[in-house]
Each structure stands twice: as C-alpha cells, then as structure tokens.
Image (cartoon, rainbow, N blue to C red; front, side, top):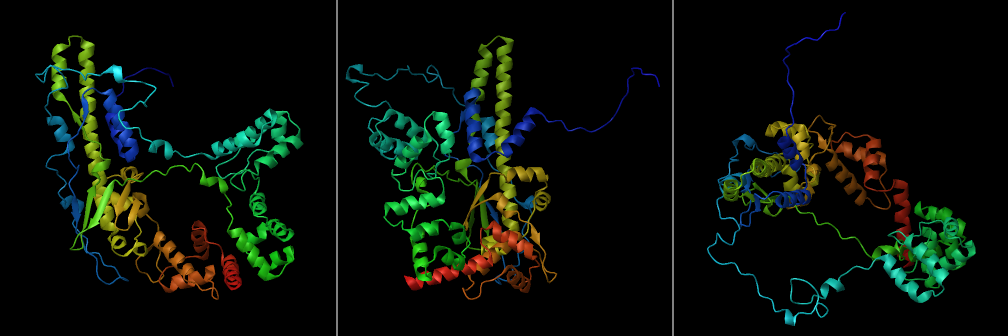
Length: 513
C-alpha cells in the first residue's frame, strides 16, 4: 500500500479544557484557606479586582424541610422537595454585584480635595527607644506567649552544665538529633565517627545530657526513658529494672509471664506497673508544641422549631471581590498603546471570570450540602448510629452533576452541625447488608455499634469478635468476623484476650490501691 498525503473530513466529539474551565475546577476543590490565598494573589496581580468591604453575608440561607418520624429504631424520612424545586436564585449575587459596580477609583484628584499626607514630627522619634510597628503600645504578650522548643531548652542548659569546648560541640550535635518526643535518633557509634571523637567520650557527654530537664530526655528507647525518670525519683531498683527489661510482656498484659520474669508476687508487680503509668513516655512533647490549625466550617447547619434544617454558607469563608469597571474605562481612555489595551482587556476578562467562578463555587457547595443534609436527616436527628449508606453517585444524580464534581466539592470542606464539625466526606460511607433483607447499614454506624458493645462489656464477660458478630446479627447486621476485627483494629481497640488481661490488671490495681 502506497503512502500518500490526502485531505479527509472526520466528525467527532472532544472535550476542550479552556483555561477558564480549568480555573473553575481548581477553585472547586480548594479549601477555604487555599482559596483565600489564591484570591489574595489575584488581588495583587489584577489591578481591576478589589476586595468587597461591605457587610454582606454571602448566600442566603436555605431551609430544608426534612422531618423524621418519632420512632427512633425505625427512622422514616418524609419526602423532601428536590433540589430543582428549591429557589436557588439569589436577589443580588456576588457576580451581579461585581459586574454592576460603579464607583470612583482611588485617586486623590477625583475626590475633589487636596491630598495631604500625615505630618510626622521626627524630632521625637527614636528607633532604639521603641519597637517598630503600627501600634503605639509596646505589646509584651507577643514575647511572653512565645513557645520554647525542646532544642532551645536543652541548649540553654548546655551553656551552664558543660564548659569544655569539645564536649559542647558533641553535646550540640546530639541535641540536634533529638526528635519532638525527646528521644535521641542518632546512633552513638556513627556520631563518634562523624565527630572524630572517641566513643567513650561521646557516651560520657550523652550521660550528662540525660540528666537535663525534663527527666527522661535524650533516651534511645522507651525502657531507657522510663529508667531515667525512675532514677530521678530514686526508684530504679533491681525489680523495677527487671520490669523494664520485659516491657513487651507488659504491653501484652501477660501478667503471669511478667511475674515469673520479674520474680515477685502479684501485688508488688501491680504496684510497680502503677508507678510506670505515672511516668511520661514522651517528655519532649511538653515543649514547643505545634499550634493546631482551627477548622473553619464552610457550611452551617442549624435546626428550626418545626424540625427542619437550615443550611447556609459561612460568610466568613467566602472571599468577596468586585470588578472596578470605572477604573477600566478611565484607563482605556488614556492609554494609546495596543499592548496596554490588550493587557487591561485581559485583566477585565480574568476578573469577571474569577467573580463568576467564586459565585458558582458557592452555589455548588450549597446545593451539595443541602442534598447531604436531606439524605442524612436521621444522623442529625438521632446520631451516628442512624447514619445511612451514601455514595457520590447518589448525590450526583440528585443534584444533576458529575461524580467528579461531587468529589471535588466534598474535599477539604467542613460542615458545622449541632453534633459537631464534620468533613463532607464523613457522610459518604459504604453499605453493609442487613441479615433480615432490610435496609443496609452504614459502615460508620456499624463501627459505632462495635465500640459501644466493647465499652459496655463487663470484666467477667469480655466479648470476642465472634460474640460481637452474633450480637450484630441479632440486631440485623450481616457482617463477617474479619470485618469486625478490621474495624476494631482501625479504632485501636485491642483483642479480647488483651482487654481481659487489662481489666484484670485494673481490678488488681484497685484492690492494691
């Protein structure tokens, strides 16, 4: 077959991802913190964008009338109006406000008054006498609340405890190898090679560092950490050292084997275990703890007096921006270069699209949140034990969107409810079939039932995984034993054997105490 060039007409469908569409999709999956950072960057880059300083509260609230029956065991949710029946049109949306804005640009001449900057009397100023800042008051709280890290705390003690220059270098090397919990992560032999110092000298410096505050710091293992703390309390006797040498048996709650290894009676063993429980296994965590990032919810849910749920967007997380078209018209009249006009036109189009994308993002989050509240009405009424199985496909079909859009909407988004703050992904759980051909059960609800059964068990009747399976099947949950074991391990609940040993040890400790 000869090769030749020819013209051929073909018809087909192809999805073209424009830059604007890519931006809208990217905005949809951003968290509130990431979205704020993105908008701040756009405000600095685009001269036509301005921050909306009005007292608007974003989208109006939506009322979802999802009544539940009074019978708790069999929750019946009445048919609620579909999303298409809800009035999703806002009287004054963010996009409309952005497109209709018409105000004076920030220009001293446009205001009609002479611009005069503040007069500063530099004769009374002294850079050395007061700190730099906008506030006239010297704020001591910003220094008093500063967290001291573990390494800084150890370095401060090093300056007083060790005077030899070589030992100070070795000590600083070891301090830099301490993790947040206070344990030494470096190998002593490798440290001696890196420093070019004798191993005995490095070990001697380590022994001095292990006397620093807090007690137990610079340890290389849990047993050594506890031994250092017991030595500080003058309680490290041979029996206690034997107990520390057999910590794996203690972790297994195997008191019989542990008593034989330590060679003591049971009462003394329980008393020593009680002393170990009062020690700190991670002494370094009390210094320089990382600040926790506060979760700011994107959606607020509250109940009404008639049993309905009000779903509204959190106005604090919605960045509000406006397009200054007056400034655009003024600039385009004065510039003559083609490149400058093209630049301003591109800024105008980008600003308009950003405002529309932010408005569409808010509307999409609100619609998806409404449907989640409608689907999980029993959870909001009665708790996690009534959480229904739910997947992305069910929400996507209800709101006429694609599953990928629902996945992006529910990522890194949080909902504040009367039962706490939950990520939107929390409400999507797999289904576990019913043993009586009834409605399927949510896996999260089944995990909650397993935890409740274990919390309510008595020391004399500890439930095994097979017994938990039997209890759940009597309640209509068809579940396998390996699934129960998987859920139990995910919740970090020990096995029935370990729980029995732990309860027995607690009972002995109570009798001894």
